[in-house]
Length: 344
Image (cartoon, rainbow, N blue to C red; front, side, top):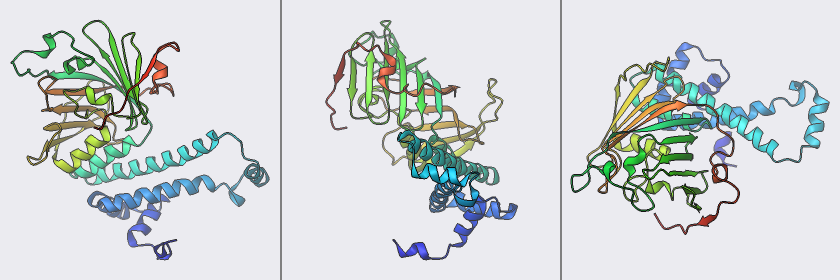
């Protein structure tokens, strides 16, 4: 064990302990929020302590805290055989810790409303929750091809159609690593592709199910060329937004369908940064960090594909547990083809 674990807690750690136990007053909460907003190391330390606090909270039912001590210890000696119990317990305290992190970051945003980096961290923390979100994709600017034509007017070509046919597509996300994209093609067929975080898959019309052990394999073909797809690799895109973009606040217009006043962050890519959209807008709920609208302007284009798209939140209704596995989207008799993963 590292000797540092025996050192007395720092002033920041003491402040974190008091906050997690609800003992801070307004001045201490403001001081903690200030440190979290200005230091990524402070935010990491808080996240570590929050997860540990959540774990200890689940174990605090032992001994004198247990409603029935004999039954509690009997359960410890004869635990259920199903590994699901372990997974459920782990998921519970991780979710509790994530909720604490989001809560403190929300406090940071309220107390320090001009700190755009703290707001972006709040949005990223919300991705760690396993909340299902469904979006519709709108093509705001279809762009033009190298010959000046409109790619929307061209017929379907090859395995992957022009990405302008993203208009009206449905995107479902769970956390930051699982997605399903449902896309209507001009020939009347549909293309459904997705990832469960470990592997990716693609189904086109009545054809075979193509699978890959690379969770990003099929997503790379959504936009022009073989580039990554920002809205399918959302955590990576938000990390790039923090590292390679100049952030500023803007006031988004009120959304009639939403009773929640939204905050707006706009990022303009630094001139030295390579790749990625030139500008990104995030419309999000300041209380939860939930993205309600995401606009990608100036997308890289390989001769086709949209120049600008928007994702608009349509639902947060929970989806079936197996929704992000390909088996949930076809019958049992469908042929499966495993594709060889090429280096990206």
